[in-house]
Structures are given as C-alpha cells and as structure tokens.
Image (cartoon, one colour):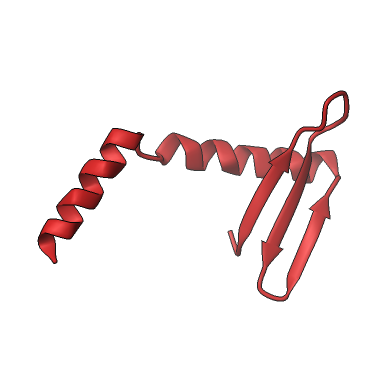
Length: 65
C-alpha cells in the first residue's frame, strides 16, 4: 500500500474504491481492482487487534516511555 483507501458500497450499485497517495487520488471502478482492494482490506482487518488488545498495547507502550 502506498496510501489510504476507502471501499464504498452504494445501495443497489457495484462496490467502488477510492485511493489516496501523495499528490494523487483515484476513484476505482474496475471490478478486478475493487476486488483487490477488498482483499487487501480483509487481510488488514484479519491482522488488526481487537479494541481491548489495542488498549492493552497502548498502555504497555506508555509504560515503556
């Protein structure tokens, strides 16, 4: 990933993506490109900590300062 992205699912319409990087942004409408963004989101989400885990990690990091 070179920047942030957003997946949009308009009611009754195909899913879209919107990407932002330094000096550029792009609306993604190609179904294959949107599928890739959705897969990347799924991968990121699967690796994310839960809210309690995130809070515990932040508290541990603050204790190390």
